[in-house]
Image (cartoon, one colour):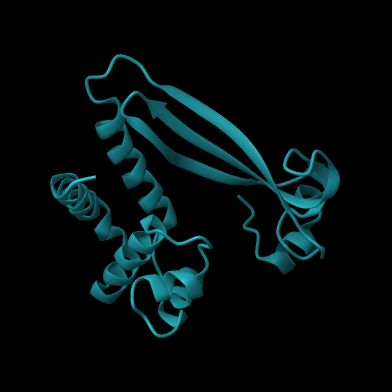
Length: 172
């Protein structure tokens, strides 16, 4: 890898961030989000808040934890902006590309996480107590990108208003 390649990546990141930065209403949140993404793109073995904070030179993970857990920003708008950027840059004038749908099971011990129950998990290869996420990606000869995600809500959860309410699941 040479300096020109790295410089090109930095320019691409700046261009992408100009398009999606408005999803974060406050300047400090835009900066934290950009720093977080740079950490994710960095050479860190475990991508948790502590490791990422260290990667980008922060003393604690508090800023990232606040960004992900308590700060106000629009995840749907961000998803839409990333999808738009991906379509423009991965498909462009290219002839073709594919959409990839995949489910992933997240093993859980308790019963309070939204959508958790004993159900088949492809990750485990058997019925386990888990949540199931469904992901949509696009790929072309120019690269690949995750463009959508949803948490699968089992029928038992859909029919249990009290449980949905306790977990903060909206009616819609």
